[in-house]
Length: 333
Image 1 (cartoon, one colour):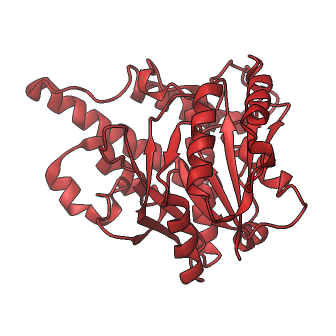
Image 2 (cartoon, helix red, strand yellow):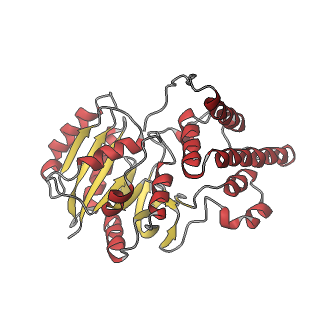
Image 3 (cartoon, helix red, strand yellow):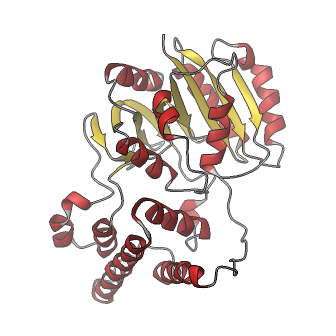
């Protein structure tokens, strides 16, 4: 029987994390494995509250034993999940699958079983992810193509004829209506084959937040292990509870850093520069249309300026290797 290690990362949302644990345990009924909750150094009493509540509910002695661990360092989403994956199953055995679940995501009773069954019946598939929807049932767009220069231009120009011309490069593709292969999935509810992680490694911890799932799925795909979107696995997701993305006034530094790292790592510095230029060109044309159409801009204030300045600073860094950017406080995953 396949064994599943479920990892849930907490950052200052203990009540919601406990809801996610409870939903996960219901969805794990009949599945061999365990749950590890990683507190990502919240510093607000989360670890103590989670530990006490897990013991009070008897979850630590249940059929899918729940452990609460303290990472001791907030390295972001990838680092926190890596900490839980490395902790492994309580008996030291190696899991067959790792299932990562956001602390604000709640799998339906059959959601985790659907992912296990899919990977068991599709041995050539590396990762599988769920159909994610809001509390109101509205689907969340979580299945994507890998980012590219043309994809950046299409996404930012927001012009129907261009989108039709570049249809094969649209990153946020329409959600598949049936289980299908995709390039990458958002990590709110994703199951990964341990054999694949052993081969390609875990999350790249250079990413603090965002693009880490994109990079991991790309590495898996290049190693011959594609990713599937499984519509039978349904998970409710509130979204952006820890990151605050819905209330961003400006694009944060960590998002810009992650985007740049993804492009430079996977395509090189010249490609990263071209992708930024494509974003700025598409965004500038979109803003020109807004002078006539009076539509909502759709981007945080200063988006193009911040992206351009960030790119220019990155280009200047090799010219002044002794000059390091000042550390900035950033939200925690």
